[in-house]
Image 1 (cartoon, rainbow, N blue to C red):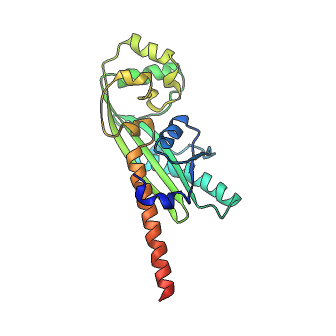
Image 2 (cartoon, rainbow, N blue to C red):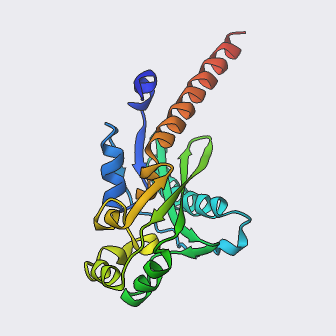
Image 3 (tube, one colour):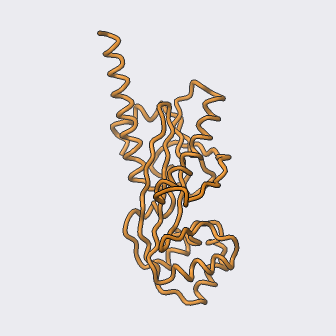
Length: 219
């Protein structure tokens, strides 16, 4: 995917503004050297202040990435930074399902998701020297019909307690899902294909701008 921009990518210091080992493993799997740097951005935005769910996850992702970018740039202004922030939310009938407060809340969420189609929205922000690139991917996730026993067993595993919507598609939670429509990796929290496309486009645009600037100086 990065064949045409490898020479540009190698000059970048790429940072994932996250502590998520899941997202880190995903981005490492495509052969990109990435640093993990947790963001101190306070995730207290209210989704009701935004017209679309996509705007909310993009704003949260941008807050995470911008805080890390500013901090790293201040400590090393010469670094050619590319900082990636991500935020994922689950919705069902326009209700937002964040991380459950406790086990009982996880049971409530999963009971509502059972037999229904929820939507997973993952917003991505890529901070660089000339600004921030934003996009959102959305995937429809169809749950099977779950019994109370199945829900309780899953909650007792502990897996749902730190995940938006109280499930993880890549773990035990995958057995609860009948099918999806959209990007699997969006549900995991990092839509890989779109992210790679956006990074490629960003680097190609950057190279074009540099070439144009050099040509202008020659004139």
